[in-house]
Length: 294
Image (cartoon, rainbow, N blue to C red; front, side, top):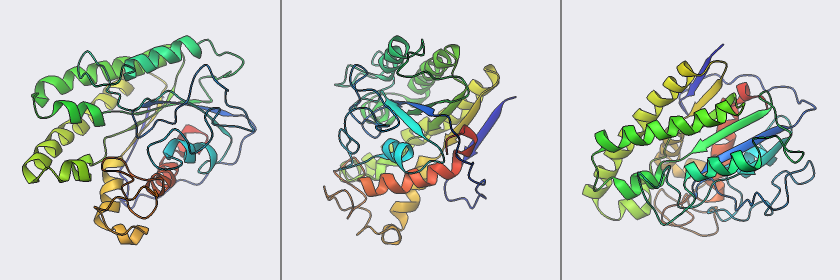
């Protein structure tokens, strides 16, 4: 049976009842860029019941001033024990051959690292199709590096073809549970917004095309690969909701920056702080019950 749970944050959808805690662990493999990274080293200390993040310590290695969404979904916002294997690397695009950044470890490389370290289900990660969840949050850097000098209608389909290919590699290795996050409204980040309305509008148009193509790609992935449970989480809608009413969520305003990670939405001019990540993780949990650990 194929499942698509496409959740639009803040749309008033009724949340499913929380699952009862289960005795078995869930293995959470994540891929992406700085919004996801925790500095995890596949050759370092591996996750255990007493240390579910493995390495480094919870709240370090992020770009949030503290814990990010992966850490919260691993250690706080879950219904059963989660072990985190986070292969995301700051600055990554999906494929450097399509959009080259200053980071060597694009998502293609991250998936290859998973195949080398974990596809054979080692004792440090004895996952199965039933208890492993694969998460992707990519595209922020693809857009940031490409939008001003590339035709979205030409480049985005190439990116999505490679994106689908990477998800299908994990499917071929036994992955059956997937969560995709679309790109948040980084056009509203101080870094982009401060460049003026014309730049912000051009960036936003490219971003909208990327997110529309991602939704199409996810539907095609489900259609072409039987037996998946797949969540498409709308980070774009959720962050917009917070930015539209920042004081409601405890932030000073939508534009300020504070490296304390809590006072403002933004930890720096391009990355939200841990207080935002905590809010998003709590919202994500309500949309991820079908994946088993939340």
